[in-house]
Image 1 (cartoon, rainbow, N blue to C red):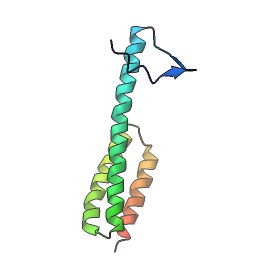
Image 2: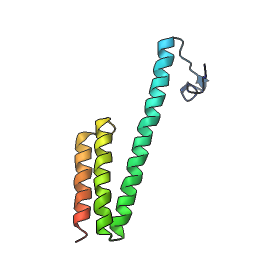
Image 3: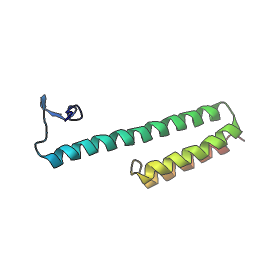
Image 4: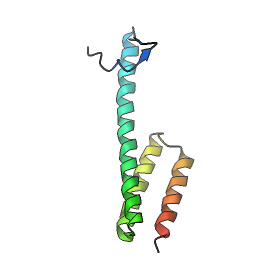
Length: 103
């Protein structure tokens, strides 16, 4: 069994390897979910960055299309409990106001 998935979990400089099979499986599951959540977060950040650059460049049509994508990715992150629902609502509202300020 590859123990490379267990390496990041250290305690006082000593690698702590779980003893039980279920604990090893849980660690493997947690690592996999962590990487998946990280993908969602970075994708969201990239989408927001591209939206903000199109807003700063005064490209209203492009920004409006990207805003839909931003909403979609924020909702996906909220569904996976990566963002709190109030945080998602606040961000969506602020991005909407940002787009409306282009008029």
